[in-house]
Image 1 (cartoon, rainbow, N blue to C red):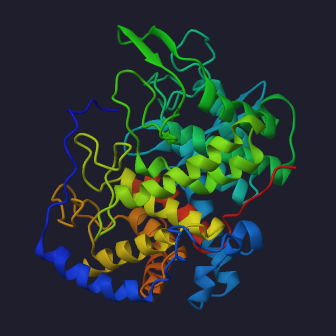
Image 2: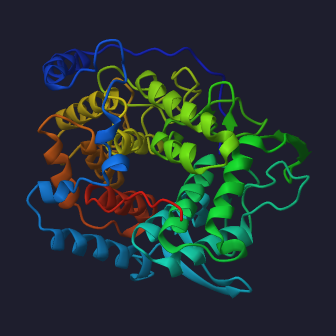
Image 3: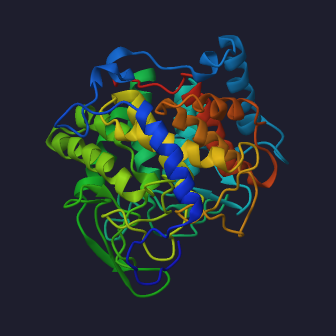
Length: 439
């Protein structure tokens, strides 16, 4: 977590590339479905997977057999969770306590553990029916990262970063971790029922979700000195997730934290008094995506103000931003409520196709100028760009799915972030990332 300079006004710089791509997209738009008159969101929600129970298998649509798809998913899970610890695995067992086995997922490159990775790992585990791994990750999260002190400014939430031995490196909260914890817990309640205490998944999800909206504002001392004030993880006026609830930062959001597909479920399964809020939050995120993305490239900044303008120095498309297209595309796949999400996927894929399907870089200005910070063809970005095919309408979408199919399981120093995005993308594109209603 870094401090940022003052916000600056949002501007999209013009360029010759954007003009050419805009012409291409005008042709694409002719093929994209238009919303019914009088409704910018006028899509048939009954066509989504929540209503139909049908999940597209994009790999099968591309000609691969269901057996091949399952084998690819199983191979990726085996490597990333139980492969060679030197250059393959990101999941590590860490003994046991009174609640049972412990395990963590580590960021290999940065030698730490993050709520992002732990909660992603739990989501992967519940989707693949891996209860032992799920429970061990949840146990580790609560043992080492949960803030139980009622006078701490992060009380009721999880510190976002620690060392592999559990020593905390940060006192602060990264709300995307809480969001994935809640969703994974609700799905666990649906898939496995519930146990007692820490493993009463439904009760744990309800409690954490309520705190995300209603936890009292607390001012307390920071280990780094001074006082910090923090409260809930969502801004009540804008109905948007915060990048951080801490007074050390201005109030802004992260586009990749916006998960309307999850909010719709919380509006049905969460505490009754908050269901209207979650329905409104889903609508707010759907309205936010077009504002936060470039009108030609559909690239979004890492961090954004509530009006969609870039926040501070995080004004470019970089690692956090990889995930945003997956969020709007899964929302379309599950709910089918906003055709603008289809248009965004078409624009984004047109941009990356123009950069070379097997060579495009991973960091750009929003208008599509490649940054020279790092030029690698990131496997995690390839993965999420394939998930965008769940919403895309142009035939080029098949190329992005096949690019993921042909991408090897990430290994080496980048395998944490790249690998988790890769494995979740296999589940999404293979029809295996599903809604599991709580029992």
